[in-house]
Image (cartoon, rainbow, N blue to C red; front, side, top):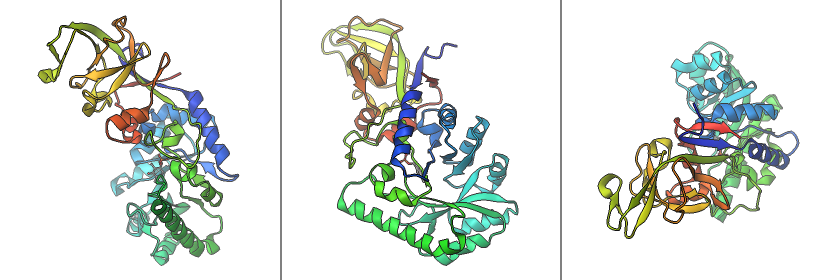
Length: 374
Ligand SMILES: *Cc1c(COP(=O)(O)O)cnc(C)c1O
């Protein structure tokens, strides 16, 4: 089947390599990149991205679930795969079968892992104030007891920052507080376990905005920015980085319609032509990850021109008003994220139009889209 026949994602592996090298230059000697390839590598396709990263010599990866880890392993990825989220005891077998490293989400969970009675590789999660996963930084004596569990092979310890993408003084202060709490836990644990495990703290923003943190850590869990995008278009980083977007989103125009003034189009006839208009029906819809709330709001590029999405977005199709690009023919492509001629739509812009962040737009790109490396 023709890969670019309906709706597809193009991956620029050149841009991925550029971003990986940029991060590797930012990180100090001894701190390795541990890319987050969860949620199908933020929608990009975990197999394709994982294999390209492996070709670049990456040896550590993180995913959200044991199933994602199993899929990555099955795609031929070697090295350490860390499961950041909860794994149900019924699935502990997967951890061993696919040689995955599990996060100890708190000390109670640590006991469940121990009770499995088989060796498991784990990283200990520390909650330093996000109040999501991890054992509280205050319970250092309980944390320390995890090293007495004979079935746990502890190869790492980490925490997660919740305001590192913020630029206000309050955000920065809280980030410093989390870092201090984490360092205090490490200080208590380290003497007896010097360098016995990897320590990590930062995601994309923790690396880009807080460079001075990097010296202390062995791994850095970069996700979003490795794919060359930021959460929002207006994001103010402390400094400008030349990240290059990896993903383009494209779809085929199926047919062109000429509408007279006053005629409506799409479900509910939610949109009406106020003058003679030309519409293009495009083979992509909300089942592919175009948010339905972009109905009458979003844009695409056709022959390099930015044109509006009109009417209600359907599950498998949507309508563009291509009156401003009258030469366009059926079978041509429409670009929703990426470049066309001199035009460009960034994923950050689509996210802003949809009232969300880039992370959500990308990670929800549908399973039906064909992923093609270019
Ligand atoms: C998703 C995730 C990351 C990566 O975050 P980005 O902001 O995409 O770089 C790192 N650590 C944890 C615990 C995560 O859940």
